[in-house]
Image 1 (cartoon, helix red, strand yellow):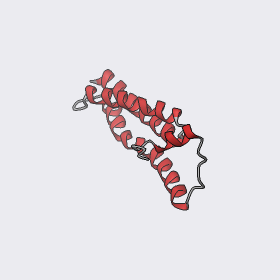
Image 2 (spheres, rainbow, N blue to C red):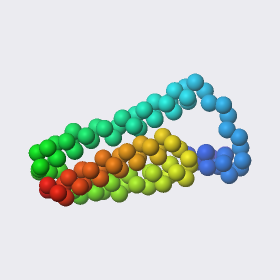
Image 3 (tube, rainbow, N blue to C red):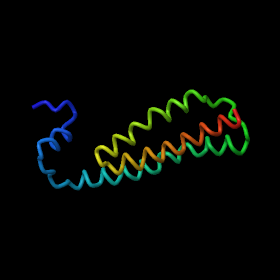
Image 4 (cartoon, rainbow, N blue to C red):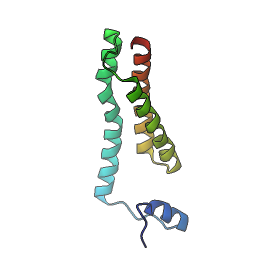
Length: 108
């Protein structure tokens, strides 16, 4: 059967039990959680720059608002699928994205 990339939804609907995770899958789960937590910190230099210089020159409000908007559904997706990695990562992304938007509104 062709799952069209939605195998997990099919298996949940059918009540198929999950198989034991392989060491590779366990490693990948841990790695994505770590990267998901660290990733949002890559925006900190932008936030620091805006708030220390009190200038948002060259920072696009439209871009950051759109990033904020398109990130939000990922939180809902993570909650619907009970995926801690997605939930934590995208909540952190929303926090830093919102900080940039606030900085641009204040100093832009």
